[in-house]
Length: 241
Image (cartoon, rainbow, N blue to C red; front, side, top):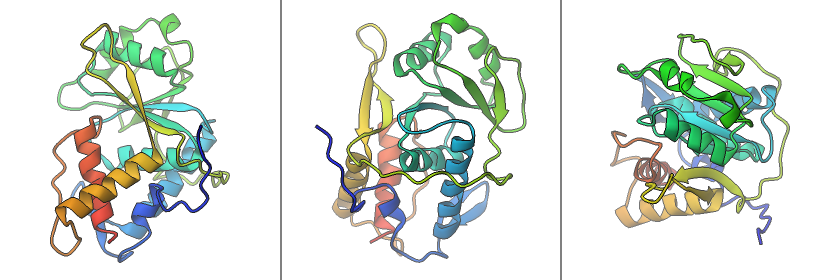
């Protein structure tokens, strides 16, 4: 049984509650992003998701390389009670269709292009009837491609949307879906809650003695895998100590 916890001390947002608001917490595309600026990005992303009819219990599949939008989508989904399904960028049509169908994703957020990966061609290999819950594609980047589902651009950082409605956060509810290796049949889904993600990040920071004054992270491992995201959350927790 899930328990409601109003303290939010084990929430993803709590990883950003302490520390110098003006100090960079990310550097993306050669531009530093402060703690306060990242909070603003989360609010903008939550507003964008809500404007696109994503709310409590809805699943958003994120098919992106490591970028600020990936992290903002996770934190924003947590605020709305929505769920992120992490999609490996090495997936091809059959694997992507399996994950979309199994997770019942309502939206797929996808790269326009990255180092020769033809996302449009991969999507074109999926029969629409096999992913009946998928209502919308959202493109990150400036590319376009034809698709069976309606397509919008991820413009949360460029356009003002009405603020997302507030939600009472259940820290033990699913917020992230990862896939297993799929050694028997197709990959299976493993659900993680805010509490497990945030507390694991705090445990990593404590075990490694991470701090903003002494440590930085070159995030090379993909966020679509547990090692990449766990490392990132550990550093966020360390920078909040």
